[in-house]
Length: 304
Image (cartoon, rainbow, N blue to C red; front, side, top):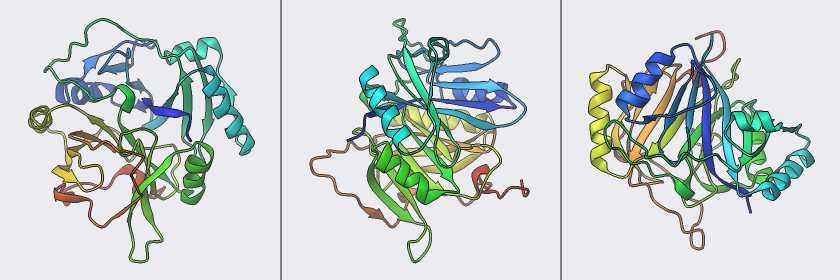
């Protein structure tokens, strides 16, 4: 059984923080949060001071994916499991943990080189969450949402997340006829998947495929879609309903070559009865990706 409770946060570096602000705040309707870097963008959607941090830099890359555990004892068990698998773990100092708004945290890299920060004791902001368009996000015990990570070491990554970190398989979809290459969906709570792994070519820096956040109404999704269209953001995938998690969502291209999925009505998994499935179509309807530019994660090094 996994010690991880949910996706806690995402921290990225971007060459265009201003455009990220237009997307997250003016487009998707998140609130402006707070954090330690004066020139960074912090996006808030619930009682956490921020869930998404965008730091300025000279390249676009994923800096860290944060995963939450119950307490210091669970954090210690995760540390022991990761070290037993032969992976170096850094125990973050009190100051370093404070930087990510946590009481305690550890950090290590997954087999694809993505930095993971596992933490407990998140700092809360009890002031009202005032979003610019009245949006309400679905978080709580389900976490921030889900993240899809590319991996050039797919088998090693899948084993690490399932056998070491305890993620539960929640199905797959084939990328070839034989089923040798698959996207695999992994869960740690009632959200259908908090993580998906996708085979990808090697990259020079850690990247993303997409981050999904969920709101409570279809109207909020439709209104956000209108706004990002007006802002001339590229729609990577049109509005549609997924077959696995039943989410009604669209995908918008973020600065840096990654996607943000924005959806509603995601299913809840009852683990007492769930069995892992293979879906044969990504969507019941919609989710047309024919007009999308290639994601950065799938462009081989030297061709971007």
